[in-house]
Amino acid sequence: MKRIEVKLALPVVAPLLDVIRELASGLRGELAAPLGPSDLDAEFAAAWTSELLEAQTADVAALLAMFNEEFFAEGVIAFDEDNAEQIVRATAAVRLRLRELHLKTLGDEMLESGNVELERLDDPVRKAFMCYLFLATIQELIIQHLDSSILES
Amino acid sequence: MTRGQSKTEGSPAPHSAVATELEGRWLVVVLNDPVNLMSYVVLVFKKVFGFDESTARKHMLEVHERGRSVVWSGVREKAEAYAFTLQQWHLTAVLEHEDAA
Image (cartoon, rainbow over all chains, first blue to last red; front, side):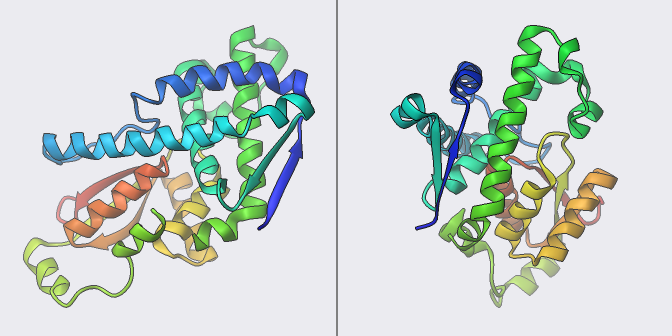
């Protein structure tokens, strides 16, 4: 099985985990990408949302599980064919939530370009933006190295 | 997703053409968001619709540049299944009837 290990700087990444954990808690009750406007009847929409929430919660749990004892001992996280799909989806969910709750002040254009002057940001926004970039990096790594296992699963 | 999703792919059932004629076609439209990475959107389109790289990129760029892309059209039930799967991947998808588009 293909397995990717990434060595991270523990002092940099550990504080970002608090942000991810806090968002993960909110994502148990709310979809990262709300349903678009539709004419679905209320009962169907509720069942749909509930199923999506269940899947989203499982995905985010897989993301958090990556930061295990090995991470806290050696700073290493690992992706493989078993967790790649869930983690890539969870990073998308948490990034959407970060934008919704902490990064709206930056504006969408700045978020899309990534052209942000970190030193000008307030502490909480800077931390949220670092987290946003960190999750994008994880997502890119998985897409680069494990896209075929996601496509074939 | 994964195997369950293959229910929404493959050859249409024989009754689909009749159903489409009766109900009209429904469009699955993906809307732009400033968060999801281009590479992620391409991956999702390949995974969900079985698009090749260039078709997936074409739709991704359409979403990025025009704000929306029609990624599939056909019977309502199947369109709903696709919209659900896209939502599971955190893309914003809406259904539109072709007459309203």
